[in-house]
Length: 610
Image (tube, rainbow, N blue to C red; front, side, top):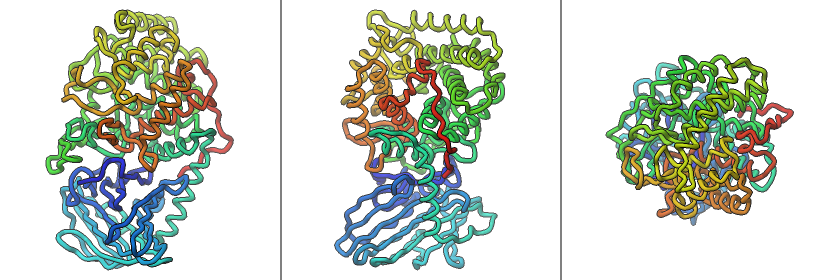
């Protein structure tokens, strides 16, 4: 059985990522990209579905941390016979795609077991393993893995196993490299040299973070996670490194999150720009324009790492799922949904990009005009909403508000940057949308905006209404909405997306609290001047991170454990932006709403790339 989700760490090379357990087992790795087939899939099954274990042969006390400012994981094993550390990292792609594991002896002598179970194609394909000079070669169809190590290994029941011992001052290394099977074996490179280069690159990058205040280290760690989830060749940010980690253990709310969502667009730009990472913000902005290019009527809510559009969803029957949470899904059918909110996300992001001078002001303007023309025809339609429900479409209030945002940001961009456009027509449309939302999306008896037109329940996405500037924070309708969310969606002091027991979203009820929504409540408290409550909730959320500072998508208050895909970009983006809102040196919520027209301050030196 896999470990609890919070017992995993992420390592990566900005093109793919692996999850390493507290027990020294790599239980998840897709090669060569985030969305490739996994060669280690024990996370969603058993060790027989692929893993790489390096662990002491006897009981040991375990502690771990990331080396400061890096994604280099150090796991410390203290046994009766001695102390040793295991370093896990993935060098950046200039040296090819590889996973390095280095065991250092510190005190006494510690014996280790090695168990390498390579199963390509998400745990299905047993590769052909042969000995080669200085290592082992495993090939299955188009994929090849090559392992170099001084440890004597042997085949045993379709596994590769071995034992070794390290004493104080001794080092044993493992270099597992990936290559297409038709190409030559990857060259050997000194693992200690790769360690030095990898640490230096990450630390140079982390040093560019210009956040000050009590949460600097917290923000820096989240930014490192976000960088690790960025696909370097294109600038696309994946929602998570995993697929099918359940929102409720044992349930079927299990989705593939190894893709890029437009809903993350504006928060991503602001998180990077406000912390000094303009290269990453520019790369994300450019990815957005490339991904949505084409007919506006064919714009999707999500895309592949390079802007791929076909993300066909299917189920894998041979994997039982994390703690038997089936089915395991590859691909995501939500890419075919209509979500009106993505129009606003896109136009808002591109407006913020102009504010931050990420590109010439007219860049992409013609495409945006065409998108607005399409939105004019579609904003009155029902959709599946920000939460991608698999029930019938509805007139979701948040979606309509984001249509208002699209017209509003186009007007602001055209006015501020002297761009041509039918401003009077857009103003009329903006007023129509706002009037309809205030009429049909607000329930006077509840004193609150509601989930969709005619509903009697709220949705945490309504917390974003003041953040996007739809109404001022102190408007009684906003105050009433926050109060309604506090009354009906709070569980153990945290926020549900919506109550799955009361609404039909096409799936069985039951999920954890959605962490990004709780950060949105932090932001709402800041905007309402409730700073004490905002800080207390923020600190409560920080306490939910695992020992390495990582967050998943959700948290289960009953079992007190993280649930959902991991680590989750949306949660870490929300954390960074809430920290900025609380620190008062920059206010993403005010920037987005237009209450603060100042652009994020560009640092003098361009950020280094890890």
